[in-house]
Amino acid sequence: MPSRTNEDKIEELTKLCATFITQIEALQGSIKGMVSDNSDVQKAVGELKTTSAVITQQIIELKAWKDSVGSLTEVHTKNALLQKECEDLRKWQEDEKKRRETWGSRLWMVIPPILAVVLGYFLGKAK
Image (tube, rainbow, N blue to C red):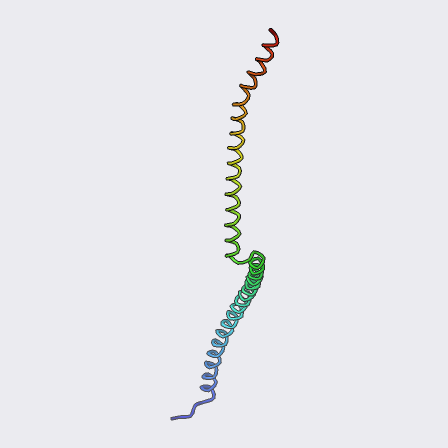
């Protein structure tokens, strides 16, 4: 095998350099894409941190609200007591209405005899 000449070696090196340059350009494009993807990821992570902070704050507020309201059993008990009081007030209101109606009808039952006595007295005195 004959030895290679300098021109052959230079030509081979030129081909290798062209291949390396193509590969380097492809790598640079990939790196730029990764950098832009990284900024998107960082933006998404920032949004997640913000959302997480908001959710944490809402959980704290809900716990405080729950503590101020009390347990559900307490709320149900208070609700049942209030409903019972409302029923009692409605019953009392109905009883008062019936009592007033009864009192009114009794008054009307007493008025005619009293009116008759008064009219009889004045008519008797006028004679």
